[in-house]
Image 1 (tube, each protein chain N blue to C red):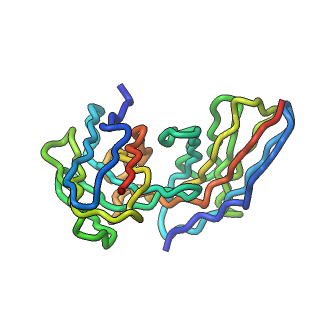
Image 2 (image 1 turned 60 degrees about the vertical axis):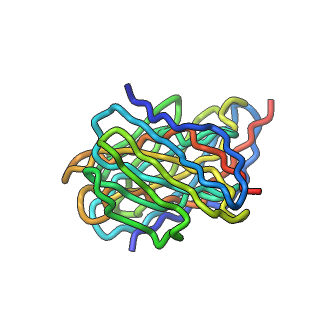
Length: 115
Length: 115
């Protein structure tokens, strides 16, 4: 079945540090890959997405590349800010098929950025 | 409009109460979802509606009863809940067509406390 493995947290960084959060996946079909972000007390916001191999998703300085050969979708940002402190979820969904777009989530990674 | 609206934002209910959570979207999405999220955990899928029909029920107890009155609305009826049902309940929607982008949009959630 489909699953997502996400690096353990929490991650604590100083402002302007480089961020990497690792994510690997297992899928039976042709998944789309996502990073969602959740700020305290809020719902999930889509941060970026990639729908096919070698696609790079990017938003707000965050980037992730869909690597089919390594089944990975690692999240990176060159210079984090205090406002990036949140929980980050890697997720996948299958395009079409019986799973109807349901999301399979990784465990989530808590990021805290100190000034 | 890429918004999913959930009401209420907070709900406290007794174990003998009956209450309903509401979700609305106007993006023309034909798949709608209920997820349950406990603290420091990823969201867990509860139900999927596709074209207003219940398509996936992840073995959710019958004290949770979903309803999809039309293509824009999704309800979750609650009855005789237990304290362990306290959680953040998230509604989401996405397109539901073969080959379509399966990006899901989430509401802000309802924070439910069962006393």
